[in-house]
Length: 172
Image 1: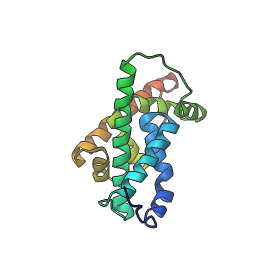
Image 2 (image 1 turned 60 degrees about the vertical axis):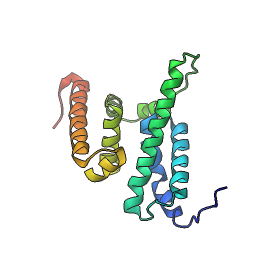
Image 3 (image 1 turned 180 degrees about the horizontal axis):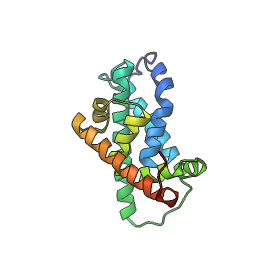
Image 4 (image 1 turned 90 degrees about the vertical axis):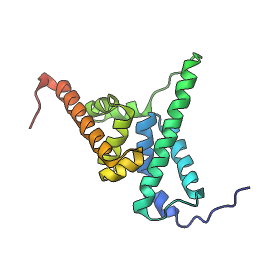
């Protein structure tokens, strides 16, 4: 039986990182409820692990890496279930509903056009303002590979957004 871990060190980290972590997970799995479950599981796993760093600078990439891995596991399971060809129940995707209400829905569409790994890299780099070495640690690649992923993803986003602008004209 697991012994309860001492929790005072993690409480400020949960308060500071819960919302951005749910945003990351929602981007990856495109389902807010599943994202919340993934984040809760991630926090439990890092809390129980004796190797988890307790300082914010080291904890954040550790937590994000756990979330990315859990999201990937979820996607793999979903892919297996989809191949079984059971009847599907469709539900409104909270990410789609939220993006349809925002003025920059085109960016959301362009982001969904990126590969999963490119989405992860762009999110961690720009939405979390993480340096490239942290991006690499979170998504499990070298720093140079993280730079290339972000660079290529930005080029794809620019092309997509340029073609989706009215009259094909971009503003300076």
